[in-house]
Length: 300
Image (cartoon, rainbow, N blue to C red; front, top):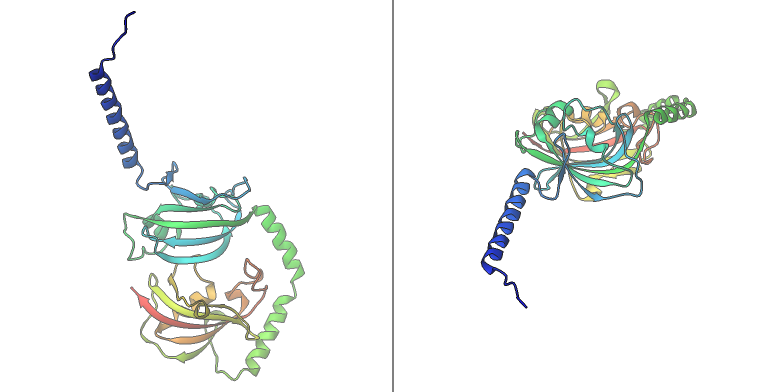
């Protein structure tokens, strides 16, 4: 009986060649993917899922979505965080944030990495923040809370408006009565905004692109507080002049403020959450709101 002996030298060489090819392949893959643990779409968006919900139906363009959204640097420093409801638009360039929402079902949460310059200049139509690289990326964390079709949104809006048709008159009457009974000296400002300065500020007024650091407290006309950075123990930061960050009334309010100023503003509902209220139901339709804002710092 003949026994065929294994050529150890040749076997070892084959193992070395295979190991080398595997190493090269892994190296090439890592070079192609700029962000480990993230997958890439054809349009150049990087993504990874934190959580997968039970629903399999994903949002589509023109749907109205309700999301928790955060903007972060690549080092995970948060510079914006909020809950928002809006309509997903058809992207006007490859890699637009709108595509991110169409990758999510209700209950999903994910991290996305986008090019910073086109997002701020094209989507938000604003200047790139100074702390982001013009050729670099930033992160967006999105949690999909809910979405409805455009047709369903229109139907629900029509039904809702029919129900609250008389609320607008009621709100104006309440505001008139509040101002007549109020001992504070409020001044009528632009577009129906009322203002009372508590503490004067210094320096220049806020400019588009400034990063604002502020404390605020929001309450109803009856004095009940619905939101407060002071109670949370954390200041609020956002870039002035960018969409999806604050309500219109707050944007108008801080536009006339200086660093260090503290003022109280009365915002009729058309400058706040309007005829629909906010998305989680905490603020009812046609609610006039009072905001006390302390502009702590302006960063340029």
